Length: 128
Image (cartoon, rainbow, N blue to C red; front, side, top):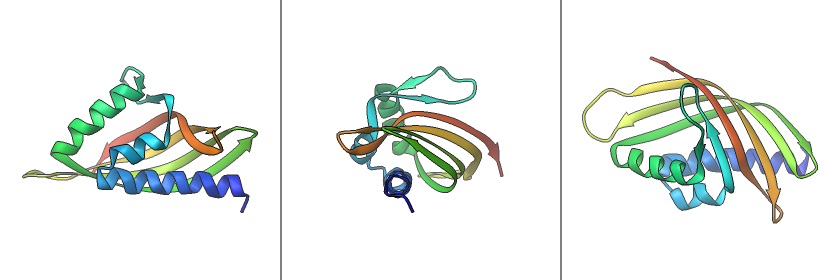
């Protein structure tokens, strides 16, 4: 496996682990300062809004994600990856878990030798 592809796969795996752990500092290390997150029906979310939303969500829920990489392409200091993502969201108190699943398209940028998330388009749908 190409070293860049391996490094990007590591970012994806570490992102899932940090999300489950609620490790916001680690997530921030894996995203560019100018990162933008896109979700259907929502305004684009910059890094600061992601941080605020994630912090608020972690107070009330636990998130576990499983990602299946479909494709990674690298061109210099830019790369893209599309995944199939399956996310389980469980309330920390009472309530039923929910599931969201679908595809994501992520653009990575190599900055200071490390791959970070620059843009992420999340196309997850609700499911049982």
